[in-house]
Image 1: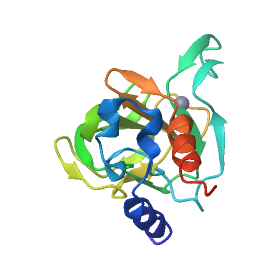
Image 2: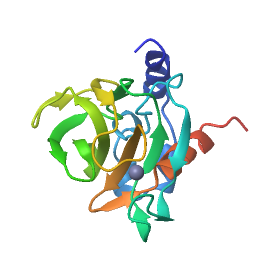
Image 3: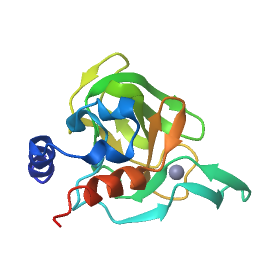
Amino acid sequence: MNRVLPVLLVLISIRSTFAQDLSEEKKSVPLNLIPVFPPLQESDFIEVSSIYGYRIHPIKNKKKFHHGIDLIVNKGKPVFATAPGIVKKSLYEKGYGNKIVIAHPGNFKTLYAHLWIKMVKKDEKVLRGQLIGFAGDTGEVTGTHLHYEIWYRDRTINPVIIWKTFVKNHKKA
Ligand SMILES: [Zn+2]
């Protein structure tokens, strides 16, 4: 939490126009409840190995839509809830491996996959920045990474769009 906490405090303290690019409904959700928070500590994040969108699946070798972003991180590094919410799933699933899904206010959901260890159970309440597990290589993977998805209603959103929108709206003129 040491490196994450300052970011968290900054995010909470900013009364932003982040929601400008989002719909009216999303606009009514306070910024500190939207999953703009990073799921990893900055110092643990190595690189993005797969972006959101169509790609050739590394194992199936077929063109497939990748609904999340793959963040390379060493095994055992902490993974954090990116917004407050309630754990909807905490289970093992073929493909995703150890997987956690959290429902957030305003119809947002986040998904964390290939975890080594899950630290939260279904129906548990979590805070933003709360430790929910440790990164790993469970399920179908070619290496250790965190697969991270953001959902709005029943669709995935590119997490980079969420992050970029946030940064853009906080740039000083
Ligand atoms: Zn992935």
